[in-house]
Image 1 (cartoon, helix red, strand yellow):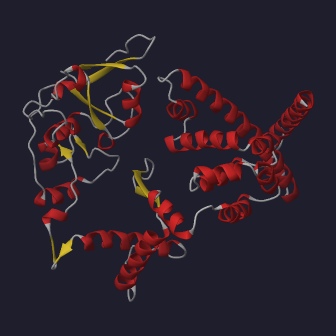
Image 2: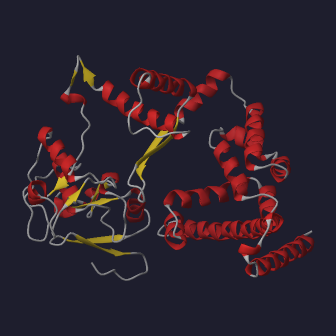
Image 3: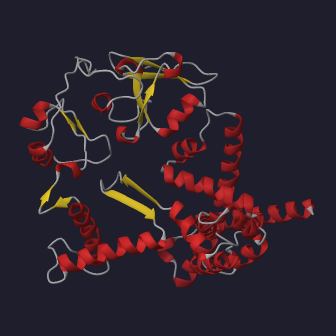
Length: 413
């Protein structure tokens, strides 16, 4: 059986090489519809091979990370492949799914299914209990057969029906399980600068949110739509976004005025000269996130905001904010935001607003909660320090961090 599989793999690799050679010789401008169809078919075969090989590389990366805590598969995938961390997590999830469904991996290797089919399984598996996952894993051969003969959309519908049939919970138990898995994520798209949100809600909460959102949209835009509203399909999505913003502001209102206790707390670090005069060569301005706010908007916010003056040394270190006993105080967090726009690890671009203060000398080892002993670290690099054996040192004048990984030399600060 092993020899037969080897021959089959060799034949498939030979077919992929032939398809790639033919694709390299194609003059796209001369192709008719049938020629384009054949070229796309060959391209999909090559792409399936690439996806399958990527799975092998990712799996090997996971094997190495299991031995060395300092190796972070998500980070290596993102940096080496030039992809986002969410894309890297998707690659890791594909390996996890194929480990559970070996027949799907065989189909992927042969080009019978695409990575989109694997992602369909990943999305559906995330909602299942361990018992339900086990039941579905037992149907790996059936799953691969359906995927081979279906588009990803049709496969998704078939898989959802199978998940419903496999459910071992009654309706109330399933609803409770869905409540535990309700989530919402927000981030800033680095290309557009727009704030993005993505989440899943249990049916009861979801219907409540959607219902209230629809009420707000109908009330605000029933007779007249705003001038910013586009035409076509994007119109509804635009109105929903405006309705969500209005719903958030509406929840903050009390008797016709906004209560200060319900205002969102937003930290904007900006130097005084920029606030008063505008951008200059030494402007300092950030929000602790990837969100960029115009200076005119910051000035408007400053009219009603609580402004906290921070005195900095010539090297940018905070001088006059206090200390805390164990956890960093709000003032110390604000000081860290003033000194570090991102995670303190060199080259890490995770915004400081998504980081946590870290004691360079651990608290349990007698390290004080002092600004000279605190730096902001993202979740990934926090794990590198505590579980991966990374050693950090801080230049308190420049606030630059040097990193020494196990078995390597210290990086220059």
